[in-house]
Image 1 (cartoon, one colour):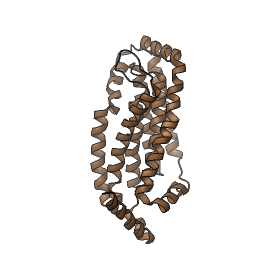
Image 2 (cartoon, helix red, strand yellow):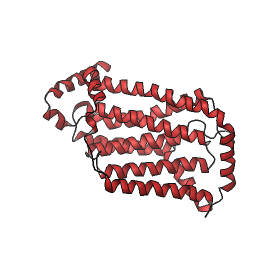
Image 3 (cartoon, one colour):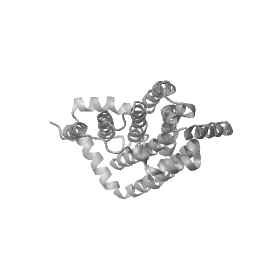
Image 4 (spheres, one colour):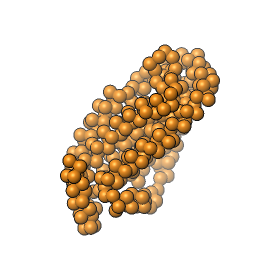
Length: 283
């Protein structure tokens, strides 16, 4: 078996096996939705302003974390070139090449746009039946924000890092947008589905995140195998996507509140009125 085939199959098998073991043994602990920061921000700023604050602060954090990676990666140019040349020399497994050519497209801009648009429509319908007020817009707003924030930050980081990708010209540069998109956009969709059906702390959630991990590894490997990125670009894209996903999940917790919570806690109804007033003020 080709060495690159083993480098793909073995880690992928470990991810799937590890996820399967974790799924079988998973037992949820105390709920994580009660963590203090979200509650404090909601009480001070409200849901809308709080979510905007989270997204703005998260954007700054991403630049502060990922930019130094791209800047420092220029010191590893010899290692990047060595890995790149070694992969091109050994990338001759016909079936793997064909598979990578197909699988790498799952995070292309067009494919991500289509999946995102479908998810926005379906999840908004699901939210309408079980949410009230501004919360029904949570899926559409956040999925659109995930794509646009990733898109704009990718170009910003590319300019800041000032690091070109492999030849020929026109291929990817730092960071890998494909790796970032599959983590943050697809990861957000997974989280929203789990949240809507109250499955965020279940075995189903562990299985879903395992699928995302396997897909993310496949995307990262395909970018390397097909010679579209340096290794450091891929590392930067994975870090970028993971941090952005964490920011988006925090914003989702800030914006979204089931209607049952408002019925159970009457004081939240007043907060809802304040949120609606914020919407009119912004308009």
